[in-house]
Image 1 (tube, one colour):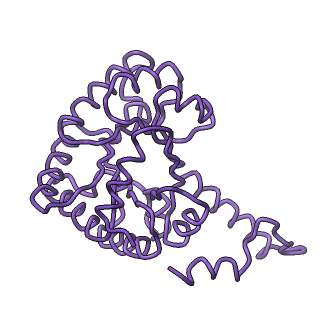
Image 2 (tube, helix red, strand yellow; image 1 turned 45 degrees about the vertical axis):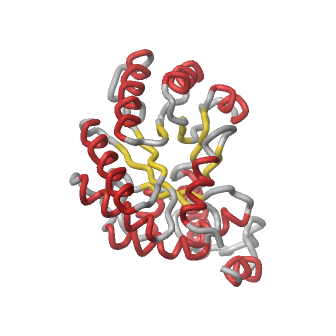
Length: 271
């Protein structure tokens, strides 16, 4: 099995060209299933992972539960793993950096770290501290800096949002970020402007309104994440099936999408 350092180096290479597709998982089972489909790397959705542990999204997940969950995921994976850690579950850069070091020790190759509605200077401080602690420890991690300019509408739509995003991207890059994640960005012209305006590989969040994947690659996008979409779909399907089982009437019918017991069990027999 490859080392964490080798997987991290591979993860960096995966951002160099083409479009890296990340189907975000929320636990060890979903991560192993996604990997078995040929995914070149695996990512978590912070929302899905928090829900699976019984917490709401939004920096509410205790770090101890995060670390326990990641340990179960890395046990079954052979591909690079990147973890969405929201705002780092703390406003203290030293605390965030310590959490990241613990994740690296568990085999994590990348993290997402967001500015949310906060002063971008705070995210810069967190990134810089992560970089310093990684240098001291002789380890590496791919830091994907997420800005919520579009998602939270922190600037007027159009050119102002592009300008604000690029200004933040420059600051995050100087602090040590390796990638730029801009959820909520969907307009082709703005995608192209941001991709061309930063040296960081651009990551977008899947939305139905986005251009097709070939177009995204031509526009300069290097990474496309499913986010919580798969977890939401799984929850919706489970709710529908459970309602059919618990309600009055004929109950469950055969599910053509269901995976068999043997097929699912075999996924973990060699993990």
